[in-house]
Length: 182
Image (cartoon, rainbow, N blue to C red):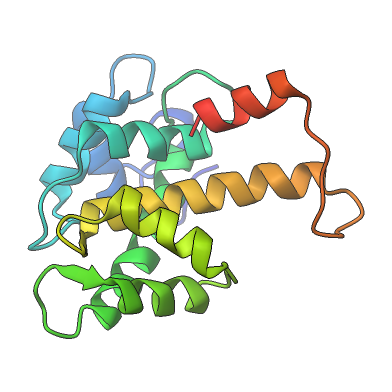
């Protein structure tokens, strides 16, 4: 599908789209990007702003979150979706990083998670803090990593909670596949 006023690139992607420019600069012949290419792409695009560039692990998680064909790579439509999600998370993070330190504290993280629609127990929040904090503070890269995992785990849980009761049955192998992929 071509967009009015734009020349279409491969697969109908608008050649003038700035996001496509970032994407195509690192994508291979197959029109897909891997985790290390995503890391370069996001760094070059400046989406992390004044924060540290995304780690390779966070980039792997981002790809896994949107990897519907299980290729361990990301095409442009997934990249566009990721870009929108990242911008939302960046805005949320910035609104709770009130001292502009590039980190959020536990209470700020909890408020951010609540505004994103999650209602987690104090025990779950404690686990998140232990996993993602550095000296009691969570930098942007770790915040994004946390958001990716929360979204992916929630999506996987919802697929299995067919009655929307807040309860789901998992087989051990299924549980391992879900938790190891995110």
